[in-house]
Length: 115
Image (cartoon, rainbow, N blue to C red):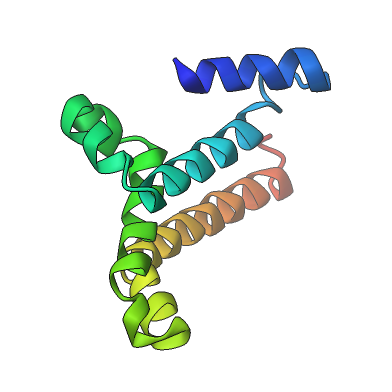
């Protein structure tokens, strides 16, 4: 519901279309999840909401920032940076690889005249 409200806000106040409002909506949702995690509110929300808060992109943002907060005593580079991307690294790499394969297939289909 919050995500829909944010998307509607972008559509009506900044003249986005439904398609173009998706990216800033996701960015704002991740930012809110990270902010709530930093203040210690997200964990209580997750206990109430269950998988509804763990599965979407907000759960991903929570997982990244939780690792960063947990290891901040080890320093910014090795503690925060190194541990923050342990979880995110595999997800980001899978996404980049999948985007590359899809882009390659689309390029080949365009070259062959199939699209």
